[in-house]
Image 1 (cartoon, protein in one colour):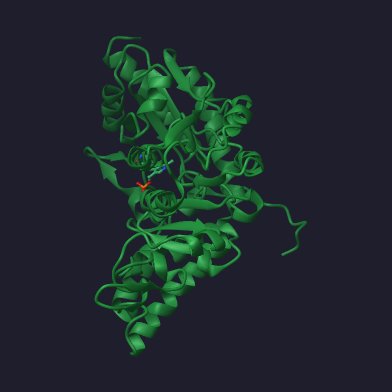
Image 2: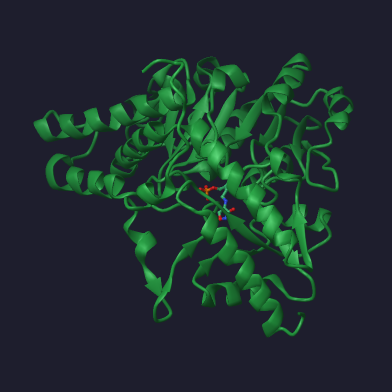
Length: 417
Ligand code: 7TS
């Protein structure tokens, strides 16, 4: 295809036909409006079918059997690794580790790299907008080692206060761990710039990419980051599989995280020699079929194009800001849409987020309410809980309008209108 060919906007109605669950009707006969994509996305039939196909025709354990079936599943599993490598533009296949999700990826780095490299008084720099899975593993490490955690502050509109970064980096932290996109306020953080400054100060950079890889093009080499973790279930793939990217030199120098089968070259009764990458970090039977399904999900996303997905979601976000502002009593958390991915969190004056979500549910709208595993961020924003609408490419402008209409109805139910 010529690079000059115009990029057509994506057509959500056609794409929706691939997602059987999107035609579910609930509470009698209300159509499902699925706006909880930051928690997990839905799967197209292509992904579901790929799981069925493997189980029906090609399933055995991987990297073990000297038999035909094991070769089949091993080939598919390794093809999925290659698809993931290309998707994030990692240089080498050894840099792509299958995990069970973002949470395991971050814990792996905290335990393995942190266990070896972080000592008393060393600093780890996080941000005030992290998901608990990019806070707690570092807190555990800090408690164990006597290390110090610091946090890049955020502005009132939910952006990183980048002017605070030079002073924090002048303390020479060992690592900076930051979300590429906030799961609450949707802010797209300047990861490449953070990596540039962090490296100049001698720190490594880990990116929690759970909310970015599914929605924006990701190029780990262009970003210049050292580690990057994401989850398959937030990008059309099965649950139970994720990816940890790590630069080869770093992974090579790190001790194994979990011990067991597959991650060894040789075992004696009292010692072992670890295997080469990536096996070194894939102890035990890995998530074979979920990984293969993730490969199919990557093919599907690739066919649409991440740039198009991002543009489309931005359009939904802009519209959501407009219509929610017109509801009255809605406080939108986070920055203006141009700084955001497709995540819109808000509070409704005088009504608890859980009550709002319950009324939305009556209208068939699946949205999340609570602290979304980011309690410190909510505290910083001056609220305990929010309602979150999070989009994917199969959501429509009509659904955004339905959300606003249901909020008007919520106010009426609670006599706030
Ligand atoms: N990091 C971020 C930024 C996330 O949004 C999530 C999950 C995780 C890490 C953890 O991913 P997991 O796949 O290992 O669970 N976020 C959410 C959410 O916002 N609502 O439910 C899960």
